[in-house]
Image (tube, rainbow, N blue to C red; front, side, top):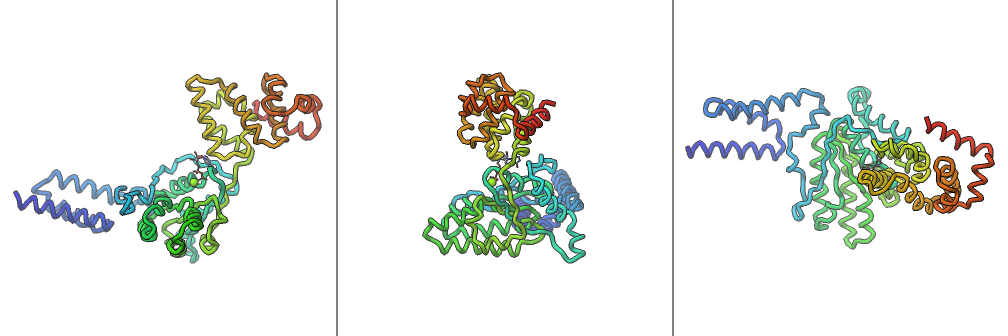
Length: 392
Ligand SMILES: Nc1ncnc2c1ncn2[C@@H]1O[C@H](COP(=O)(O)OP(=O)(O)O)[C@@H](O)[C@H]1O
Ligand SMILES: [Mg+2]
């Protein structure tokens, strides 16, 4: 009995050792041996192991990118900082049918090219080409850089790993270099998308930190990795502060992808999407909301609309109250022409008195009257176009 236990223990230890070393093929061979070994003494265990093996084999025969959607490794094995035990990488495994972020036409084309390259690597290879290995996303906060990385990984059928540079840097400075390497080595070995999010965090620290040498080493590590990143993976970086990125690092990315603040049509689409089923209630304000949200990021729009929806759901405010109060607060940050447009829309589409509208928007009643009564040619036409379009 004791002998048997010992053998179980050594077998278990061996499996763990191989698994942690990520020697998946060896784990497989070893488990196949165990199945034969335990078939007589412990048929139930043998059968269970055999089942796992078969499941594993099935993954192996499917498309190479698919296989990675179920990496052999459990998530606990993600690299962590020794001292703080903070996880260095966050992992996202989304289904490929995940909703596409709202993207400009240009952006959509760039990303679709990226995806096509990955789906047709063999064709590229036959012409001596390899797919884009690295790209840097640039743009203001809240316009979908992180979200798009997630979506892209899901489209490619691989997990997204996000390197939390704050976690890397919060570790004892002397060790952030090795932490970074650990994390990057991990991601390099499996088909995945790795996102170095807010990569300017390193650069920012550079200016107010005394240990400039260490930070320089970090940048050097990243530069080497960008150079050597295998074509089986895709290395992404994102930043709100391109001006802070070391030009030498900047040059190393295969592709620079610009994310811009949304324009009017995108703002409108975002409002529709973020309102979800409550569009039925708020739809009549769509033109007004579009004007008022113009210049805001997607995430700001989403946050505000969530607030609306919660208030309506709990009955703490009516949609009209919410809109009025919101416009009042937004009007302050709009330029004069936008405020006039807004006032005119309010006059036409709501029952608010000119007095109230003037109050909300800060546009004088005279001006409102002037724009709503006389109908000066061009401006009037586009506004009317919008309205007719929306009311169908
Ligand atoms: N292009 C977009 N399409 C749809 N939702 C978006 C978009 N951009 C931002 N959002 C919303 O805002 C949130 C934050 O966006 P995020 O991708 O983190 O922005 P960034 O990384 O550019 O700062 C997202 O989780 C999503 O809910
Ligand atoms: Mg982000």
